[in-house]
Structures are given as structure tokens and as C-alpha cells.
Length: 579
Image (cartoon, rainbow, N blue to C red):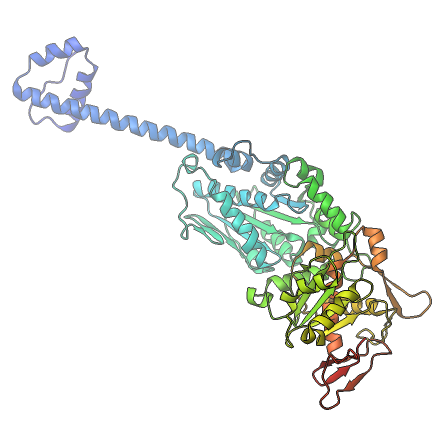
């Protein structure tokens, strides 16, 4: 081998070449070569060998980076169209945990078909599917430098605030950033409370019902997530269909849409999509009760509890425990949709307004067995959560209610179920707590009433029927409903259980299913519902309306006090004779 002669002033390329030649020598030949060099030549040789070693190291690092880049490219290329692989590889899973089969099916279908309407029962993990889809879409599109956008929306903003975006954050914290080949998203700069903002795109929460936001989405890759989609306006779905016409294989751009929801009334675009009446380009999936139980997402015992609470034939059970579309029957006193609307009004209130000062309270007294004594208070149009009172004799139950109704002259009007055993609770208030007794009223469900509905046309078989119909009118959207009710499975089940019919003997007289009839049909009493009915009836009593022929309203005589032994009651300047 002819070697480059070492000489002072040799240029960089020559030094690098010399160094590489020396590095290729055997150890014995290198030693012989070095013995023949002068001191000046040895300095040049040392520099040449250092340069060659540095260049070799740089080439090795560059090769490593290139190999890693090639591996990362291959990894993201696989993830691009496979969110299941993304979830498996790029997320940290606790021992024994993984995506359930129906979640795998949903994510795979979304990637393949690009449109998925996903119907589920309550608790089946629909928000988790949406969260994984959002993270998969953002991470893969961002890596390849593709401009992307994700819009999330729902029927109400609370669904985004309290459920979807917290779920996205939870799954984002499971991301394995070393597998993603990048640092974690920066809190408040890249991962926002309700958004993800990266170099090439963003995910954000769109105002509920805002079709214009969907129409205005412009990016090479778009994903729209509609959470609890059963109540989302048709215009939003139309915006998805209209916006997606700009996308397809010819343009190299893609538009994805995921509509996930529990079932509700058989109406609206989500319902039509889920049953295949419209949207031939949408894939459909129904997460069944058996699938959710097998996956451990929903416990079988909780479903038994719901069946006992609501009845397996009820709209509530079919919607929430089976994921089936079902409407209230025409003979239901209070439709489920009205109760759900009242729940939304309650959730939109501040905590202070949710816990306002009570103006009316109703107490339904247990008759034995599995029945409960329940108190529900109203602060104007805002109901509190049902409170279960102590069981026992009348004074015991009455005493447990004192912290909710007070003992002084000021406080809510209290209506007590005073038929049967309830009479002892009423007597305990009247005799044991004089000031409270003055604002306590006996509610005797079986007595007659002259109260008519808002139209003045309908009459009622008894006080119970009139009071239930009165609550119905307070919840009727057509009458400008403002009553706000707390979300409570027991209360919702109670309110949507009773049925009504027209009297067979008296025209335009409404009969409401009795508590005994309900108990036979459902296996329990509607305690919380009846307590709310009585609390709401308090406003009728306070208006001094005739409750039955034997009760007259008169102006209180000068100096006369409410609560005298005749059982009278004073509301403002109206005296109502006691019952």
C-alpha cells in the first residue's frame, strides 16, 4: 500500500485520507510506519488519526439517526391508519389492561370507514374510544407535518367540560413519549384544558350546535367527534356531510367523523343514522349489554339494581342499560325527556343556586317494607337532592327532618303525606314543634280537589292525580318549563314511572296510577317522586287555591294567627282552613 506522505500544512481532506489509511493498517505495520516518522511528521499523523476517528464517530451517529428515523417513519406509517396499534404501542397499559374487543372494533372501523355512529349503554366507555381517536389522529398527522384539525362538540357544553376533555387528558398522560420520539406536550401551551395545539394543527371544543364551525374546518386531515350525539342538531350532521365533499382519494385529504352516544328517544339524526335510515357512508356499531359486562366495564349487579329501580320495560332501562332507543309511552305522566331537560337546567346553575334557601318541602312517609321516608325541598324553581329520613315512629322521622326544614317560624312550607302512618309525622310536627307546625300542611292523596289544569278543561279524580299533573305542567316545555331537578337515578325513575288514564265514569277526569298499583308493577314505591310532587304542590297551597270543597280561602281576621287548634294556615294575607 502506498501511503500519503505526512507533511506539515497538509489540507483537511488529505489529513482525513491519511488517517483512514492508518486506521486500516495492521498493528505491526502501523508500528513500523511510525518508527520511520520524524517528530514533525508524527504531529501530522496524530492530527490525521484524530480527524479520521472523529469522522468515523460522526458517520456512526448519522447512521444511527438515519436508522432510528427510518424505524420511526415505519412506526408512524403503520399507526397512520391503525389507531389500535397506536394505542397498543404508544400508550402505557397497567398489567392485564388493554382495549376491549368492542373498542378495538370501533377504532378499526373509524380508521377504515372514516364515518362511525356508535350507540352504547351507559358506562360502556364511549368517551375513552373518542379520546384515543383524538390522540391517535393528532400524533400521527403532526409527525408527518400534515395540516390537521379536530373539532369536538356535544349536545351541551358540560359534556365536553366534565367528560370528554378530562378523558382526553387522562389518556394523554398514558402516552409513551419515547415511543413517539418526541418530548411530552407542554401543559397550557400544547395540551390545553380543552384543546391540543401543535405545529401543524389543533384540536378544540366547538360550541354545541355550532354547525358553522364544522363547515369552516379546512385542513388536509379533519376529524369531528360528536359526544352524546343523540341531541345534536341536524344542522351539525348536515355540515359534516357538506364539508366532507371536499375530501377523498383524488385530493389526498381525509375527513373523519365519530358520533358516539347512549340511546334516547327514537328521533333525530343520530337515531336515523344508527338504524340505517340515512347515511349509507356511515358505519354503525351498537355496544351491547353483554359486551359491556363481559369486558368488565359494567357490572352485572348494577344492571340488576337498575332493573329493580326502573323496571326492565321502562324507557330509562332500555335507554341506559340496554342502549336501545325507546320513547315514553303516551300514558306516562312525566316524559323522560322533560326530566332530562330539567336536569340540564339544574346542572347549568351555580353551586350556590343549586343549594338555595328552601321555600317548599314534601315528605313522603314510608308505609313499611322496602319503602323509604324521603324529603325533597324546593328553593323556588330549584329542587334539592332527595334526602332519606330516619325510619321509625312518627316523632323519629319528624326529628330527622328538622335540619332540612327548621323549627322556627321562618322556613319552607312543609307538606306531609298524612294518609296512614304519615299522619303520625304530621302530628309530631303540629304538636311537638309549634312554629314548624304552623307551616306544616297535611297532604291527603285520596281526597278530592277542585284544581284544574292550566287549560281549565281537565279535572282530577283525587288530590294525588291533580298534584302529579301539576308537576307535569311545571316540567312541560310547551308551558315554558323552568323547574330544575338534580340528576338522580331514583328520582328520575320515580318521576317517569306513573301512568295516567281518563276516568271511565267521569268525562275529562284524569286518574293517576296509585302507589299500590305502582308497587305491584315495579316492586317498590315512588317515594322520592311523591315527595317532589308534594313540594311542588306547595306553591298551589300558597296561592290559596281550593284544594277540595271543604277547604275555603278567607282573609285572616285581625289578630288571628296561623296554626291555631283548627289547623289553619296563613300564607301572606290568605288564610286556609286546615285539613
